[in-house]
Structures are given as C-alpha cells and as structure tokens.
Image (tube, rainbow, N blue to C red; front, top):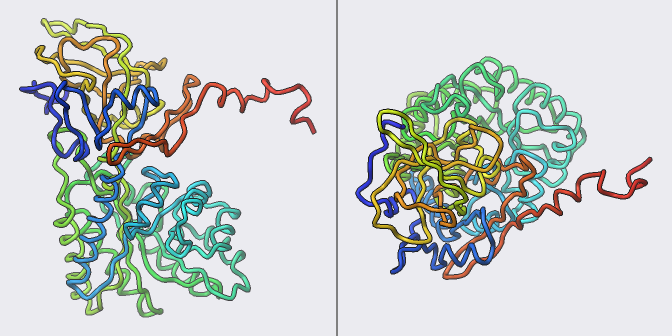
Length: 462
C-alpha cells in the first residue's frame, strides 16, 4: 500500500484538482460531468468509456498560453505554446486548442494527418521524433510545416536531400540534451545523457555547423525537453541556463530567434499530488531564461513551450463497470478487495508501464458504508493489469457499480491497445449538459475486419 494513502473521511468525495472543475455529485450521489450524468453516459455509450470535459481543456489551454505570454512579455519577448499532441489527439481537440491560440506539436505521420484534418495551419505545427522516416519528413516539408526539431545527423542528411533546390528553406531546431536529470520516473526523463533523444551540447555544435551548410535548411533555434510529470521549476530553470549558454555561443554563427523549452508539467493524479501553479511555473522558467540571457549579454529570444498533459490530463475521466469483487486476505488481519472492471491495461497502460498512481470513485451512487482498501484491476490476462494500485472505496462496492478514474485525459487513449482483442473505447466530449462522440469506439467486427483470414481466400493475393 502506498505510504501516502490514508483512510478518507468520506469515500464519496471528489478531490479538488484531481477531477474536472465541472465534476459534482447530484442529490442521489451520482457523478455529473459538465451537466451530464455518468449513468447517462454509460447508457448511451457503454463502458469502458473515455470522457473529456471540453471546457476544462479550453480553460487550461487558455490559461497556459496567458501565463507564458505574460511571463515572456515582462522581459520583452514573445512566447508560443504548442499543444503536445502525443498526450491525446483528435481532430476536435486540435480545433479546441487552435481556437484558444495554441500551435500543435506532432511526432508522427499519423499525428500530422490528424492535426491537418483538424484544420491546424501547417505554419503553426512543430514536428518531433528521434527516427523520422524520409516519407514523413518529405510530407512535412511539402505542406510547409512551421518547424522540424532535428534529432540526429542522419536526419539532417535526409532533410538536405529533401530540401535541395527548395525556394524557401525549411526551419529547424536542434534538440539538445542538457544533462539535467528530471525528478520523475526513469521512463519519463528525457534530457539525461544515456537515452535516444537529441544531441549532447558538443554534438549540437557539430549539428549546427552541418545545418548551416545546407541551403535548404534554416537553423532557427534550440530545443530541450527534460521529461514529463514534473512538479517543480528547478529542473526547467537549470536546463534553461545550460541551453542559453549554448544558444549564446551559437549566435556567433548566425541568428537563433527561438528557444523551445519543451513541456512535461505535472498534474494531480491523487489528492496528495501538488503540481505547481502554472502562472508561478511560467514566471520561474522565463525568469531563469532572462537571467541567463542577461549573464551572457544577449536579448531574450522568442520562447516556446510544449505542454500536453497539463492541458488535457485533468479534463479526462474514464468510466468502467464493476464486474467482480473479491476480498483477499493479506495476513495480519488485513484484507484487500480486488475490484475487477471491464477495461484495464488496454485502455490505461501507465500503471503497468511505470507504476503510475490513480484515484477512483464509485459514481453511480453514494455510500454510507465505511471505506475498504481496494485494488482496481482490469480484465486482461496479466497480474500486472492494475488500473488503480490502492484506493479506499465504499465497503459495499458491488458488481454493476459504475466506477470512475479521473485524470485520464493524457496518455491513456494514446497508449491504448487491443490486448486480448479488446476493442478500444470511444472518446466522448461533454459540454453544457450535452455529450457527443469525438472518437468512435471499436467493435469486435472492426478487429475482425483487419484479419486477412476472415476475408475471401483470394483477397490480397498478388
């Protein structure tokens, strides 16, 4: 059991900051999101079901943009906020964030296609990835993508061939590993030396010289991303200082108008998580950049950040139906109740991947029964198929109850799979008392349609 977990005074409460701001209990104790009851969502769309509060996404996007633009303006600089599409991407979400003034960051041909289908302007897209294939790069250049963050010398060579003879040089940034070890899970730390992304500072100098020799490329700046689910600002500040040092050095070879500081801002998954207030975080990060620039006697460049989780994560809630309830004696009089739901690691891989912690509540009703220690598990053939490692749920939790897991807007749908041939759930947006599907759920027929053995014997033959 996690050391932080305590028996709650009320196993029906909805912890502030973990659930969307619109979440509330109705008079009968059921959950309502943006004016839509969880029971109505289950009746209309089934379970498992991803639910996304549109206004929560919009408010958070607007707030992050305002925070960084204000912080940069205090130092005479501009700021651009890219929504990190890898957290969760659909054409609707692209429209929401674009309408709130955000650009979009993509890292695959599929994400690029979704962003374009959602109406994103190519000039307001950034393209990431450690192994961008030639076809992906060619497509990005063809549409006039705003910037490409280069990650290797091989990629520079590919871009040199693709952009040969181009009338307008392709704008690129260099991803730099600053050596800052973010305070997060090892799988989420991305700026330490021994990993697949980016260049060391010495290698970045070589990359900059190579890019500046290519007529079809325009080096516009440096990029760094230290990791994900980070609460404090110290790692960002330290990384910014190192990045500015390299930026100042490379200015001798030409202008570098952009400094992209990445994303990775943390959110609350449980009541004990205390992420930084975004306005304070923005001020501290931008102040650190400004201080470093002043130390080198250079102006503050245009700044960019790439938040994803902090915008869409808290807006998401996943609904499940309880299937079986099994008390298990752990010894010394301790009993853990295993609550099995109709989803699991196929719709939320994060607990299995790196022990991510979540909260849960029974949301079809309220209960006055004392809380009991529970573990919410999925229906897959893995003992590691855990949705919520430890939580106190009402002691009368029973089959048929509707259970909700908050803070699932980020990296749940995007990491989902068909393990055990489970169809991926639908994504439903709620707003002003209405619900609509923004990503259709899969059916078993959808899965069979991809199985060549189900088609006619001659189909697909050469």
